[in-house]
Length: 198
Image (cartoon, rainbow, N blue to C red; front, side, top):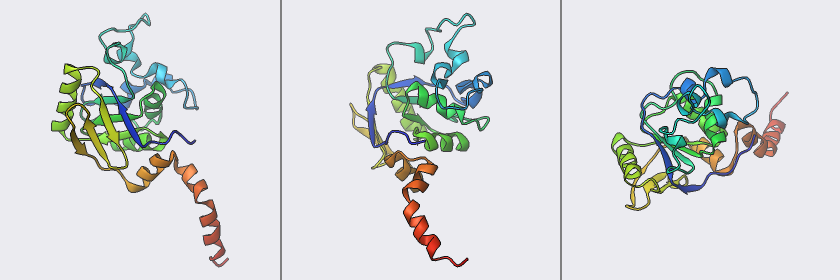
């Protein structure tokens, strides 16, 4: 399933300064019945966002009207736990295009890259600067530049580079998942097959 191309995202952000956020906290197991990537955003961090009577917990950052944007800033070790793809689907369906943390669980990171959410890993020091900037001003804008692999606090122009697999980078720039990529090079594959003996 193709998704929107990712080039540069400049946006305010939601801060979630909690370490070791696992996939069951991102999307609880009881919401994994659907097989399409739709509707999961409503239950993103369900048990943290809602009281037992389904009213919103006002203190939770995603419920706080002073925060907004397409970027989620999380604590260290974001996305640990099970390998469920639905966690990445929920992040995307809520409207996030980028998650910034100082460390990601590998499977969650790859699941994000497969559906158009860019996981940006920064140093602990830079992550703290981001949290501090948002605490000082909830409207703080962050610029995530995929072509140049950099993330910048716009007001101060303080930035840091990040790493990304070159194949995944090109897929994100083109809005491709793995199947889209194969479709994109279909003619090349067909030409290669012609050169192979049967």
